Image (cartoon, rainbow over all chains, first blue to last red; front, top):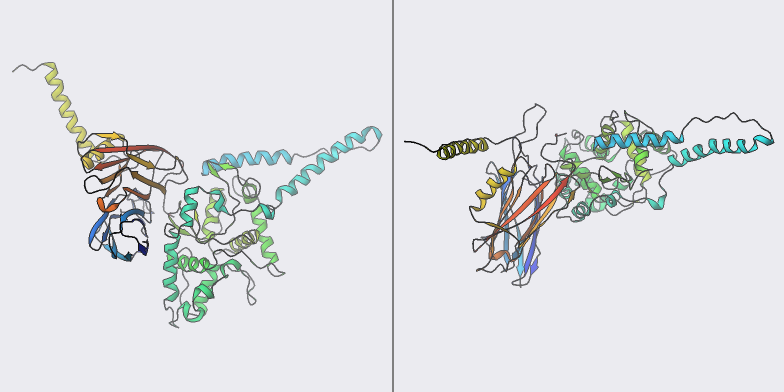
Length: 106
Length: 293
Length: 155
């Protein structure tokens, strides 16, 4: 389980554009670094990040090895209704980590 | 960075050599020679005075956190708890604080309670010399001592993810507090030993820490600003490492860059140097976890 | 059948082009501007790319190539009839030309995002936005990197 930090404003006005900040712990091993054995360390990166708002996809990013370690992504979404924002990070091997945050929209 | 350090090291060497030229001290007394005597005296005194000045600490009111010598972007990354990767390790540390360990099956929390109150101000006093110890220890070692003695658990290896997480979690509880390592008759010799290392020229470049960090802070080295080397934010998230690391790791990196043989992890020399650096930074506020280039 | 010199040269060029394509798929050690162009075409197809509407924010002199803050903002009303559907970032000197591809829609409210990227060398970084009407817009910045990423040895 990688550690993740999410910032979603706990409340927002209907129609307001809110900023969401996400940070997840991951080495993002590029596959280009040479290890102690003299062989390249195998690539190990998060390559997919998706945010859904009450089940509907509102943001998706495909990440490449050029994304820095401990991927930090901030983006915007319209506060349409109260509910849950769910964040899913998936790595090259298909393992997914999911975390959620609630939002109250007036 | 190392290449640039090499040229600057040579440059710094040239500068100091200028002031340490051997002087001709053969002065004969007499009216006609009074002028020459005075000039010769000045030539002897000035370098000595300057060499004392060169070894002088940064005036207390001129001391600044290393945060003031990094780019605005890196500083912004440090100041935003959602953007600072060090905070991820703080969360890991929080979990470890609650985790039962060792033969006693106790967690840190079982004895120390809530770290937010129990550990407040602790890191600001480290390295510390306990009543029943004969040498100061740093925070990482102190945590391991508790693990061994109180939890009856195995110590965590230096620079391991878990030890760093616990250390950064404990140190984070002192964020905002002034550094206050103890200066007393027992700690004075260790602070002096640390100062000796800091001021000693070493390695292939014959460079001392003081030459860059006491005398040339604020100037540039390979496009980066030279900081004063005030350890206010350890353990730090270093962009170069792409991970969290301890002050010992940073000191070892510095020594390797100076082309000096780095002390081993846990060496008493490193703890003496840590103690001196924290004493030198007394009064500056803790920032753990800091972000550095 | 008699072939003109032009036809023979064209045929030779076509074969050379095919060999060139084969060479590119074997992935050279470091990226080239040509690889970047191929990556751009893979992402957005044949649509022409115009400069404008996109603002790419990167520090001109980077403190450490391992972590470079990067923000892209695109002018767009982000309504269901007129929105940015994707933003891609490319580079020309890292081992790989792609950096990130972001998929957006009217629910985004603002066509902007930030992240931190790795840069292996001083180079031009390019951001391309695909609009809902099929047009593509771009911005690029030249960044100086003194401490490189991607190839640093682990501790």
